[in-house]
Structure formats: C-alpha cells, structure tokens
Image 1: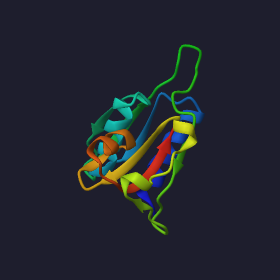
Image 2: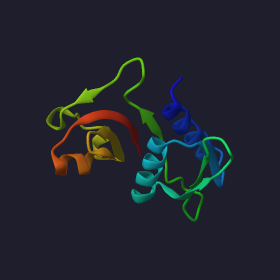
Image 3: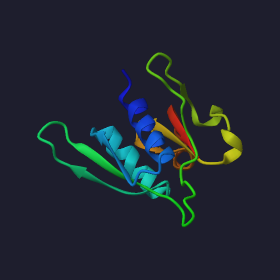
Image 4: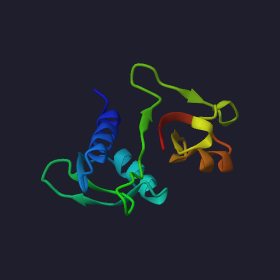
Length: 129
C-alpha cells in the first residue's frame, strides 16, 4: 500500500472529473506536499478537517476561466517497490523542464529547484505538470 500514490490518484481523478475539492487522509508528509502544490500554483488551497481519527486534508482544485486544468498529469517516480534516490547533480531532466519535480530530502520535502539551490539530493517522489 502506498498512501502517497493514493493521494496523487485522488487528486488526478478529481481534477479529471472537474471536482471542486477532494478529500485525502492526512499525514505530515501529505500536508507538506499539499503546501508545496499550493505554493507552486497547482491547487487553489487546502484545509485540515478533523474527523476524530487521523484527520482529512480537503484539497481545493484549480481551474482556469474556461475550465482549463491547472494539473495536466501527475507521475509517481519513486515507489515502495523501487525507491529512487539521487544526488542533485545526477537527477535527470523531466518533461523538458515543464512542471515541477517534488523531492524528499534531508531538509524536508521540496521542489527540484529548491534542492538545486541548497545543493542536496534525495528521493524523487513525483512529477506534476
């Protein structure tokens, strides 16, 4: 079971169906990823909803004035069956620099651009464009 892949699939499917929002089970890692997606402009916003269990993150999806999707696709790179760790200098270019690559590093979850600034590598979680 891969909770991150489940979250990305929920977001992708909700986006494909033009949902206003989707709900995903909460965790610290998911909260950090959703915060990054908001900062990068892929989602409108998010909020934490208490449910007397682990909590829920309600993610508000973003569309243009003519229903253009802000998220075209999401691709999981590192998986539980095959983790992909790389130093910053060896991380390949993804989709001709279109979109954003999200990494899990020793300094936390961040975009590839931020990791390059800090000159640290890590686990390549997923790419979103």
